Length: 534
Ligand code: XMP
Image (cartoon, rainbow, N blue to C red; front, top):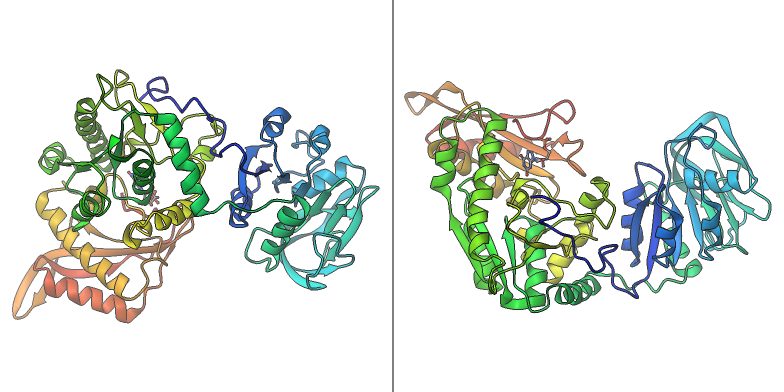
């Protein structure tokens, strides 16, 4: 779908917050923890926005922030082309906290001394408080913190007090209480800095004077008001996938506009066991959301006939999905009193990663309904556009969404088809995989491990092996178990599932599924492997 066909909401396109909500801007200097800083600020009850360091100062000023945080970053302040600090930022009259590179930038710009130390400081370090100031008041004089820097501050700028030193850094925290400018060399946002959240809270509450009212309940209230303003008396449609994002987006919109929302659930026959029924039961029966459930299994299987290459499967499924959704969308589309709004579960991390900034529209890949034709002129409603995943879950819980949906592990749009490896995804193969997967899920849930795992699933490679079951020689399928831990799917580690659990899973699969006579465990991490097999 082109950007002209799917317009971001015209009003408030700049930010997901309501007028009046306090906001703290995090200026991103490219550090690996920048998103985490923004999340931690929200955990303190303050809405935060992450903006790239090159945005004009006016963009920051117009948000009327209660405070500004400068993130860490990989550069040295002395490197040619290193990101700089706009001095006028310090004249906005709001408190500024520099973290790591952010602190070095402040110190360097304001006349202190930053130099490359002989040794860098990476990992745990001991922090010694010299003068607590307002940032470290009441905290232990000796504490652990997490460092990651080579350049080091040796002298604070004129007007600043050195608040702390660390194992390697003579000056690890500074403040100028008069101008309300603060710097810390360590990372308060990571769990390895035990008092980090406390320090952030002080900055936000004591120094910036934030009221800290951002919560799941306030998000629900704000988004409902916002959706009502955008949609007015109009009608909307939402593609439900069963995942937490589309579920929460749908529920928010339903709360806002009631039965003027219609959800469309395309059952492509590639879901896990009972998943489609659960989605329908939850939305239609429990939440009374008008729902069109399209049983499209035959269409998808027909499209997948003879297709064995993974990318060809993805393309076939994507194209068919759009076609089915389009048919439904046309029925509900902007003609007469048809739907004019399309609900999407775009998250804040998608917005950041697309580099588009909060004002630009992001259209995710096929399973989230990109690629509709231009003449279907929908305006996007994106109630999760300002939210991180953990906030989406909290909102889901606030709205009464069952834990099963709130905490559902990610599941790929093309579903089980890309877990039938090296073969056509036929109904028979999908059924074997679905049953094996069901046993795995049941046992993982029973062991209380479901939430700890990023994903757990089965894979069905196109090979048969010899076995003996009873007195019979068999020639059956191999099922591979894949379970990983991860924070974001960019990297993953294979999960060390208990042997007893693995044994139970394997024996259930071989006992209950006639077609399966061997179970293996995938012990590949990412990298070098990927999470999915194809
Ligand atoms: P990989 O296999 O690349 O997967 O390590 C990373 C994450 O992406 C999911 N994944 C997909 N999701 N459509 C999706 O919606 C796809 O085609 C697809 N392929 C992989 C995967 O499950 C994991 O969470």
